[in-house]
Image 1 (cartoon, rainbow, N blue to C red):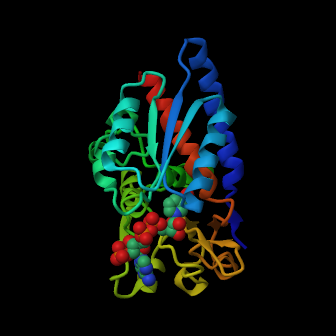
Image 2: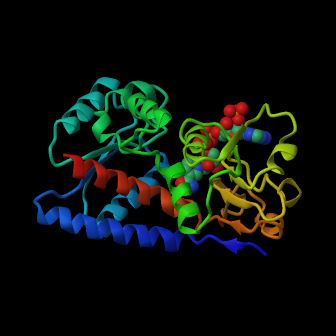
Length: 280
Ligand code: NAP
């Protein structure tokens, strides 16, 4: 049976480090501030925004939530982004995705001041990650790296397989594993023999959005398996992309869902906001 990587415990450790740094910064007259903008009524997005606000309160940050109606125009949203770009009490700006269909994510993100882009989605920050000279890392892949590090798992020289190539998880995850000297393979929906590739992995990171997709027969004995997936089953329960029952029998380490990668994502957002505040 695999060792369970306890994301809640590790997130709590990192948050207490952030809270201590926040105190020290406040003593110098700077309170880290995060602004979160949500457009429309998506229930899942509303929960994420609520948790981000709660996370800020936990570590002593100032936070502002802007809840805009579904029919907000691009001009109105950009006006708010520009206002926050110029607001000295705000160090991080996050626009909750997905936006309603009439708004273009890329245009909105491109208008966030890269120094306040705590999601690290702005093309300048994406480029900086590529060359390994970055201020912010995208929250979920960065959280995965912290989970590995805090669990004493060395990436250097390991066969790393990332399943999924999205801009917010798979691609940056592959880049971070490469920066940590892993030998990295990225799989996606056109990969010919997925199981043949996943079975090679010493470290397997799965981010595809398909419930219980990766099964025990697709994993090497002793592999480290990180499950980024968050899927709602018909009974309302949250489950990952990895079939925990069979994979945990073969893996040496595994993240559960819930309680694995999830708690790290907002924690890394707080860390990025702290970094931005320190640089101001
Ligand atoms: P996404 O944008 O939908 O991307 C999914 C990726 O999986 C795509 O690259 C797709 O390949 C690949 N894929 C789909 N089916 C596949 C298959 N059968 N075999 C191999 N690859 C396949 O999803 P995402 O935003 O990266 O999110 C992935 C999962 O992580 C979701 O469950 C999401 O909810 C979760 N998530 C969790 C957190 C967290 O904080 N824990 C944060 C973000 C996301 P193609 O590119 O070829 O289409």
